[in-house]
Image (cartoon, rainbow, N blue to C red; front, side, top):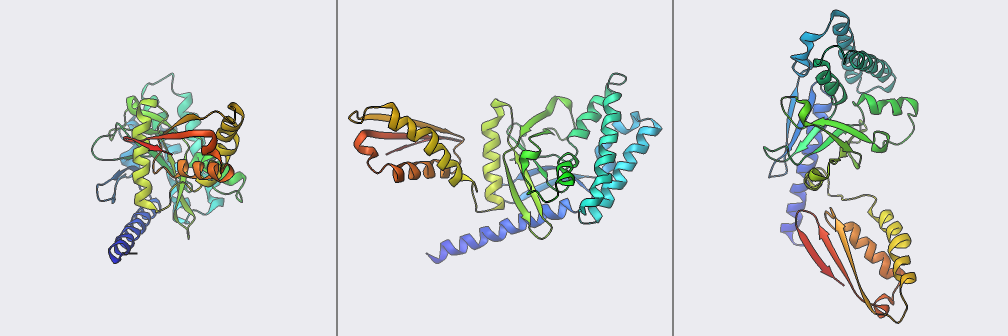
Length: 311
């Protein structure tokens, strides 16, 4: 391997570790992580805010009993974070969170400002992932150690491995000035370990809205390369299932052996193409005579642009 390539990989690995350490540091503070901006040089820029900044100006609409619940939530969250995420302390944190959430929900018919408060409650530990000044194409992230909704699953089953499927949907706001018009829904996708010692992982969520989804996956791909050299950790098992139970039966059972035909496949949101590569590796491994029966296979990878690959 050329020395220049090795040097580049070392620099990239160093930057990835710096990004991981920076995220871990923010999550171990009492600040709320609002946005992560992916810079052109693959460095990450963070926008954080204090507890007081996050709840203004809506806090002025709170009655004394509601302010008491909000301060209780702040106190228990602070205690939990300062303990380095000691799971038994998460119980009080989660209880106070859902106590306030229930109270806010009950006040919705009385005061419209509590619609914004509810949005802030649901998005409290959600972070918008974006690239550049625009928030039109973005994804969302949250952590396994701070999200009170996800932590319920950890309290109930502490020995179970972390997995974003236990928090299938996430809400986050695509506006620096919190606005209900920019609250979007995101669905669970992948996790990245950023601090093995403290067992901190980030869960990444692409946009549920179809018109934002392609741009959302572009953000995730760039965020992934800023954190790790690994791509989809489950691509091999996914490729096996897709090849064995979908593509191979279609080819072997759908056509006469003597018929030479053309197959075309489209991979939407293909990213690096590693999944498609593994699918066709599996397909040709199980069917070494496939091109005797099939004239050719066409593959289109559609991500930020279209690439056609022919076999």
